[in-house]
Length: 227
Ligand code: NI
Ligand code: MN
Image 1 (cartoon, protein in one colour):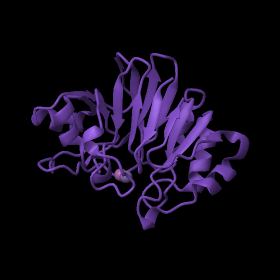
Image 2: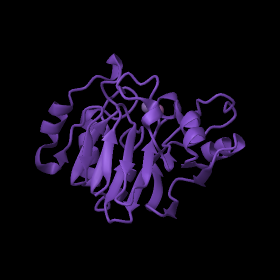
Image 3: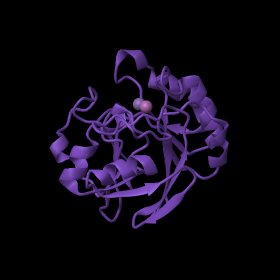
Image 4: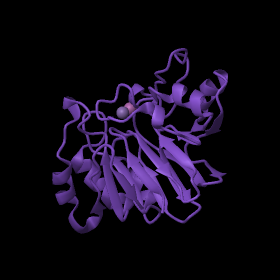
């Protein structure tokens, strides 16, 4: 069973049964919800949903220290390669088989800026992640997105879905509830809320709204969940 660790906001680590370490959207130093030490974060692969600061702030430092392969849309991957970092470019709708599983980028409706020094001329489409682990589990991190009908294409293809519920910049709880109906996962993990006052939400109230549609796993920063 992959081991999922929540670092606050939209940042997660996953360790596979084989000990492969993934980090999704590295945001540590300036993440008010992260209380660990960024130096303890290890990565074989870093997966990036989009280029906003709260998803890439520690990307370059982590990629340099770990030598991890960065999985991202072509434009972000190209920028990282220009910095001498290892990257595996993909784009929306395309998948790549990695040793730990098959990663497909899914559509997300959001902003495309790449907020890294020197990346001013790089913009891209934001993405979600669909990971079919070699061990069988099917995991989706929706990235930052509003509710989109494209989510219906994921129906029956996701066991564990990480969905933003913060509102203002992404789906809020009501739209996330519709996303649960669209995707039909067994387990829902809310993210992208409570990091700052403008995106405060009651995740437990969201869990009550979801009811028996799915099991809602509310994770506090630092929590670990085996799925
Ligand atoms: Ni964003
Ligand atoms: Mn964000």
